Image (cartoon, rainbow, N blue to C red):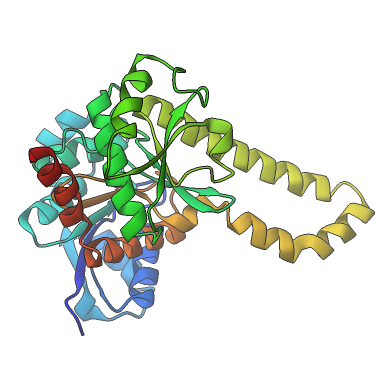
Length: 338
C-alpha cells in the first residue's frame, strides 16, 4: 500500500458531534484505503461511537482532547486559552506534520484564526481564502472567498484567482478553468472600487484563464469555473444559494402532494427528479478548503451530517496526491519573485 494520507478530524465540532462526525469518518475509511484518520476529542465519547462500527483499527487513532470550543466563543481568546480543545490539538497535528489535513464542522471563527495562527500561511500568501465548491448546471464552481477575508484588497483577489485555478485544475480535473470576477454587471467599468482595481490585475495575469466579470444570476448556470470575490459578497452569495435551493425543494415537494393527480405525477417523475436534484446537493462536494496554508484545513457546515464529513475527508486525499500546496507555492511565490 502507498503512503497513507493522515487526516485529523475534529470529532467534537458541529451540531451533530460526535455521532455524525464519527459516522462520516468511518464511511470515508471504507471508501478509501489511502486514509488514516485521527479522531480528536473526548476519548470516552468517541469510543462509544466507534463501538457501532467494524473498521480497520490500524487506520484509526483517538487523540484525547478534554476541551471544546463552542460556536459562540470569541475565536482569538478560545484559541489562546483552550489549548486542550479538539480544534487546537488537531491543527497542532497538521502544523507538526503528524497529519496532512484537518476537517472540522466546528466554530468557523476559531478554525479561521487557528488556520492562520497555528497552521500558518505559505510564504508569499497574503490572505488564505475559504473556498467551497458550489453546484452548477455544468458541474461545480469554486467560490473564493466565502468567509475568511471581508476586507480584501485587489492583490488578495488576484492570489485567490491563482489558488482557485490550481484547485479546480488539479483536484476537480478541469483543464484551463475559467475565472470570473463577481460583479453587478458584465461591463469592465461596473462595480465598486475594489472590483475596478482588481479587474486589470486579473486581465493581465498570464497564470489564469480570466473571462471577465460574472453576475450572480449566471453563476448557477455554470458561467465560470472559479468565482472570485471578497468574503462579504461571497458569503451572501453562498447563503442565498443554500436558502433558495432549500426553499425551492420544499415547495416542489409540497406542490406534488396537493392532489391525487399530482401524487401520481410525483411517482412518475421521482427517479428523474432525484437524479437532477442530486447535482445541486452541496453536501456531495464536501467542505470548504482554506487555501494557502502550510497544511490543508477543511471547514464544513456546522449542520454537517455524515455524508458531508465523509466527502470532506476524501477530498483531502486528492489534495495531497496532487501536491496542491506545492503548486500554490509555485504560482504565488515563484511567480511573484520573478
